[in-house]
Amino acid sequence: MQVSQTVANLVHRGGLAVTGGHGEQEGLSSHWEIWLFAMGGLTPMEALRSATITGAECIGMGADLGSIEAGKIADLVVLNSNPLENIRNTTDIFYVMKNGEMFEGATLNQLWPEKKQFEKFYWQKNTPPVSGNR
Image (cartoon, rainbow, N blue to C red; front, top):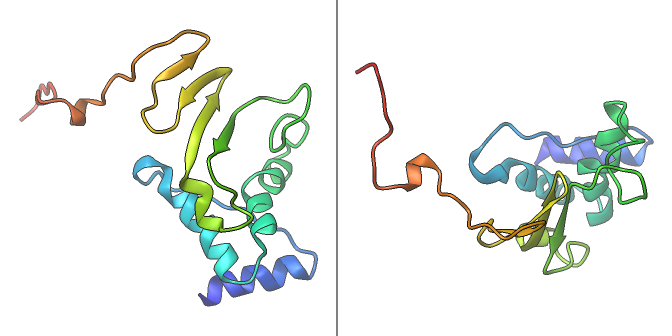
C-alpha cells in the first residue's frame, strides 16, 4: 500500500507513473496494478491514464498509441461496466480489438473481420504437449 501511495503523491506533484505487467496468466497483473494505483490515492481516471496515455507517451509512442484517435493503432478494450465508477470494472470485458481484429471478451472468439472459434491453448486440451526431451 505504501508503494501505491507514493505513486499517487508523485503523480499529484506532477510526476509520471505507468503500469507494467509481468506476464502473469491472463494479463491480470495489469489490472491489479491499475487497482493498486487507485487504492493508493489516484482517481480512477488517473489510474487508467497511467495504463494508457501516459504509458504510451513515456515510451515515445504517444502519437500512435494510448488513446482513441484517428490515425492511431486501434488496440482497445470495450468494457461492460464503467471503471470510473468502480476501478475493478477493468476486468468486465465485452470486446477486445487487437491489430484490427475484434474478439468477444468472454470467449475470445473472433467476431471481425471474420468469425472464428477460439482455439484452446495446449494446456487447455486433453492431450499432453509434445516433448522431445524427458
